[in-house]
Image (tube, rainbow over all chains, first blue to last red; front, side, top):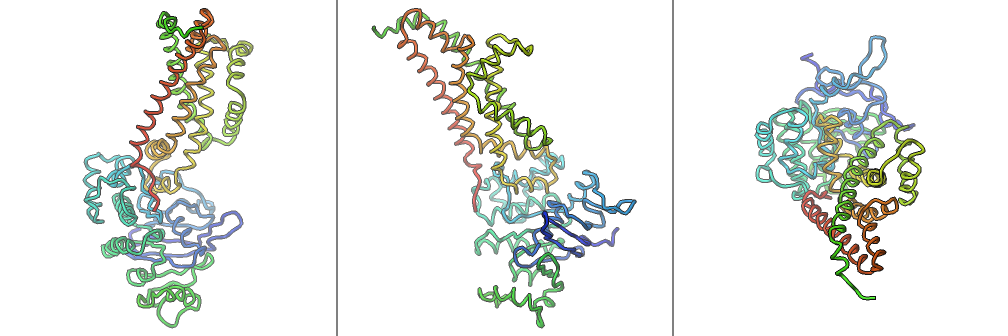
Length: 264
Length: 222
C-alpha cells in the first residue's frame, strides 16, 4: 500500500437524474502533488472534487485514498458495493476540504471553528485542541484573530480560518473548491499565499480554481475538464505551452481578454 | 357604574392563584411544545417518509382548526377514546400539542435556512449526524428562529385564556367570575389585560435581550 498514489480515481461516473455530469474520469495524484482542475462552469470539476470529498456519491467507478477504497469497493462477486459507515469515516478523515463559501460555523469564534472537530469528532481534550488550533491559526497568519467571530472577519480571513480548520485534523490530502471565487482580488492573494506555502510544505492538493496564474505557478499537474470528461492533462508547460489544444486556447482567451496574459 | 378597584384588591389572593395557573400552563406548554415541535421537525426531516407524512398531516390538522375546537374535542371527546383528563392536565396537554405543531413549523423553516455548506463542513470534519445536530444545527437554528419563537410564545400565553372554556381555573376564568359576581367587568378585565400585557412584555424583552446576545453570531454574507 505504501506505493499507492494519494488519490486514484477510476472510471468515475456521476449522474444527477438523466444528466451525466462525469462520464468516466480516470485520475491519479501522487503524494505531494498539486493538481489543479480547470474548465468552464458545468464541466464537472466541482462535482469531481465533491466526489473525492465524498460529499457526492459517484454513480459508478471507484476512488482510492492512499490505497484505501473510499465509499465503494469491488465486492467478492464482482459487484460495486458500498462500504460500512465506519470504513468511510476512516478514509474520509484523511481528506480536508475547503469550500468556496468558507462555511465557517457562525456561532463559534475562529478558534472555536478550528477546535470544534478536534474535540467533538476526534475526542481530543479541550486544552490539547486549543493548543493545536492556535498553532494552525498562527500558520495562516491569524493568531491575533482567534477570538473573532466569522462575521467580524474579512472574506480572506474567513477562508484562512477555514483552511486552518481543515489542517487541524491533519489530513493527508487537501481539496479546495474554488477557494478564492467569492473573494475580492485584493483578498485573493492572502489565501493563495497560504495555499502556496502549503504546497511547498509537500501537501497533496487538488484545487478547483479559475486562478490560471496560481495553477500555472503552483500546480504540478493541470487537468482540464470539459463536458464531464478530462480533455487535457499534463504539466502546466504541456497544457499551457504551445502547441495548445484549441479548446484550451479558447478557454484561455477569456482570461487574456481580461489582461491576464502576463501571468502565463 | 363606577371604576372600583377595591373590588379587585379584595380578590388579590384568588387572582394570584389564577395567575399562577396561567403561568404554569403557559410555561409547561412552551417547554413541552418546543421539545415536541423540535422532535416533529427532526423526524420530518430525517425520519422515514411515512412518519413524515403522518406528522405533516398532524401539523395541518392542528393548524387548520381553531384551538377552541381542539380543546373542546380533547376534553369532552377524549373520554370516548379512553382519554379522561382533568381540566388542568387536559389544558396543559391540549396547549402543548397545539404549540408543538406551530413550533415544529418554526423549527422546520429554521432547518431549511441553515446553509447546506455548514453541514457539509461538519460532515467533512467527521461529525456524526447526532454531533452535527447538537453542535451545529441546534445553535444555528436557535438564532435563526428566535424572533419567530418569541412571537409564538407570546401568542401561546394569550391562548391560555381559551382554556377557561373547559374550566381551567386560570386568569380569564377566575377574573370573569369576579366580574360576574360583582358586575364589575371593566375593573376585572382591565386587571386581566394588564397582567397578560405585563407578562408578554417581559417575554418580549427577554427575547430582545437574547437576540442582541446572538447578534454577533449573525451569518456573514461575503
